[in-house]
Amino acid sequence: NAGVMQNPRHLVRRRGQEARLRCSPMKGHSHVYWYRQLPEEGLKFMVYLQKENIIDESGMPKERFSAEFPKEGPSILRIQQVVRGDSAAYFCASSPPGQGAGGYTFGSGTRLTVV
Amino acid sequence: AQTVTQSQPEMSVQEAETVTLSCTYDTSESDYYLFWYKQPPSRQMILVIRQEAYKQQNATENRFSVNFQKAAKSFSLKISDSQLGDAAMYFCAYRSPKGAQKLVFGQGTRLTINP
Image (cartoon, rainbow over all chains, first blue to last red; front, side, top):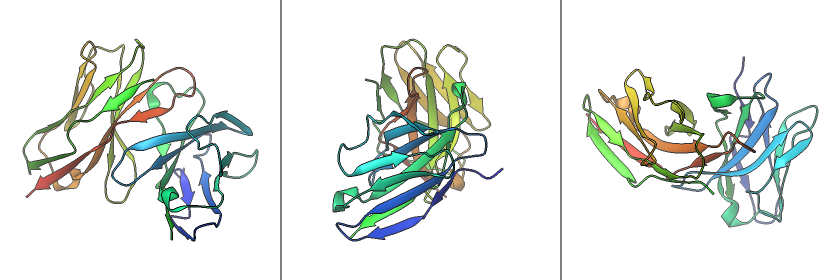
C-alpha cells in the first residue's frame, strides 16, 4: 500500500508563472489536507478537501491559490502568478473518514522555488 | 483559536543521554489530540507519538515518551538513549476532534545529537 505520493519533489518557477502541485492520497483515504512550510517554521494549514468538495479553506490566501480534489485523480494545489514569497515546502496529508486519534499520513512534500 | 508554542528553537544532547523537548498549547476545548512529529533532513513528516487528552496515562513508544499535563497545557517529549538517527526537527501539534480536524503546529525544535 503506497503512501501519500506528491509530485514533483522539487519545482522551480519564474515569477508570474503557474505552479501545479499534485497529491495522490493513500488508498482508501478520502480526506486530503494541504499545508505550507516556510523556511525554519512549522507547517501551516491551508485547505481541507474531500472528494469533489472543499470543506475548509480558511488557511488559503484569497488570491492566486486554489485547490481541488476531483472524483478521479490526484488532488491539485494550484498557484497562479507565483511570487518569491510563495517559495516554500508544500505538504499534502491524507486520512480515512473518521480518523479519530490516528492522525494523518504525510507525503514527502514539494519544494517550490520561485526565481 | 488554538496555538502551540515550542520555546526551544534548538537543543543538543550527547549520544545515549536523555533529552526533553518542551511544548505548551492554548485551547478552550476539553477533548483533543496532541502529537509529536519528527522531520529529518529528508523533509518527511514522521509521526513519533500521539496522546488523547481524555487519557491520563502518558503515551510511550519505545525510547519516546511524553509528559502530558492537561491542567498546565503542557506536552513535553522525552527521548531516552538518544541515537544519531534522532537528529531532526521536532514539531508538536494539536488537533481538535471537531470541524476540519486540522493540525496546528508549533515552530519546531532542532535537535542535534553529539557523538
